[in-house]
Length: 261
Ligand SMILES: [Zn+2]
Image (cartoon, rainbow, N blue to C red; front, side, top):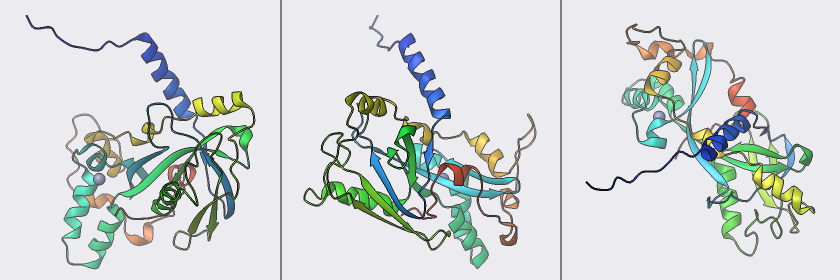
């Protein structure tokens, strides 16, 4: 009989998972305020090569309010009802359907752990942003003369993110390095605590099941045994019913409203 290879679910791993879940629920998000924001991006935790985690999220208005979820197609190559609906609508001729299709497309969001220099006593916060900030941070890392390894706890440097405008369509972000390198913190034990206290960003990439998604998009909890909703488009309210995004989106993410490339 061939040897069967398998791993073992150690109690240590279970404990780490529980701690991660508990930590995740308490994650503090940083919101970029108009004007100047100074942040220090924390170095990637051991085993990771980047301080960033990119996810593709759908932001959808439903009759019961806005919902946000990670796109199963882009995260796990699984079927996604929002992408399917967007593809259907994109083929349509009329402008309203085209507009709905555009709203349905997933947006790229990037998460990182950082120290908000305005409130360092709060420890690591999660910062979410879109393409413009991400691209500027990548460019800074690649430019060894003007930037470099900004997450290094000793020789790295703070990042200044300037936010101009506050509306959905007039908000602009510029990213530049602080002029001088600085330590993450002068006290090595604080640095270690911050680095170890980072949130596991993979928690933001959790993909809901198809059934969960369909119910979310229909804006309801489906009773067991009930036939699945036939007309998902009915779940999408007309333009005048749309309200600015509240709670989940505004609390958790700094919304740039950008489309996926
Ligand atoms: Zn999708």
